[in-house]
Image (cartoon, rainbow, N blue to C red):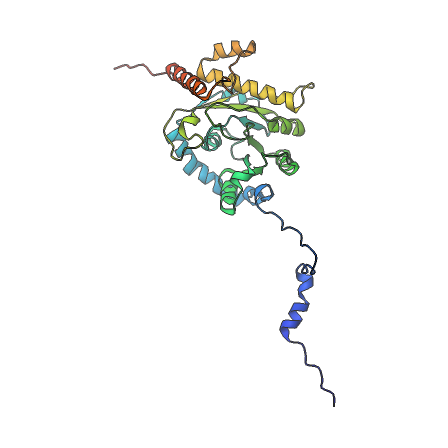
Length: 309
């Protein structure tokens, strides 16, 4: 009598059912597809814009960032009256000298934009590992932005959020200043403004490079001035490159205003004579000398309350 086949075991039956439940294995001799990246520019940040994360971020901002900014920077906010007629989402474009720039701006940008704001952060720096990516998305509402190449994904995500009513904070220089002077502006802020039909609010930060500049690990105390400019909109003749150049020139005028006085800065801006953000084209020691001279002039011009005894 022939031997009857044994019934299949439970494990065998489960293995046969795996195919509908998961992707099949790659056949031998076929090169598998590269695994999908989940970090860098591909990190998903939608969870950080849901209400539980937004409430947590509000607590971090008011309970941690604001006291830290007040302790180390004591920021002097100027030009907030220029935002009176601003309505709806906007692109906030600022110069960049320190990691403390973002906490200061997140506490300086007024309502209603402050708590509905996303920050464009370098994908290779802030989203290089899971811990840093999650912390950046939660604490500052960051989304990854490619700074080494043009990324359609980054631009599409930023534009989609602006169209949904979120404002966007971006540093057009692409990274922190290496020596205290500014770097040429790139066209990201101008491109988003043109694409989404929203204004750009130029901002200049003065003094943050003395607190925590690039290369320093421990912060020190300094007085910081945050100067807001009036909202800018591109003209019919401006493309993203020309508009980016105008944004940079306005931030340079705000820098002049912060280090001298409003009237003289406006006169120089009207004559297209505002000092460049990038500093003199000279040797490093000469640039450092000029930067120190500018900071000394600013300290001499700081207003002091009279001593009434």
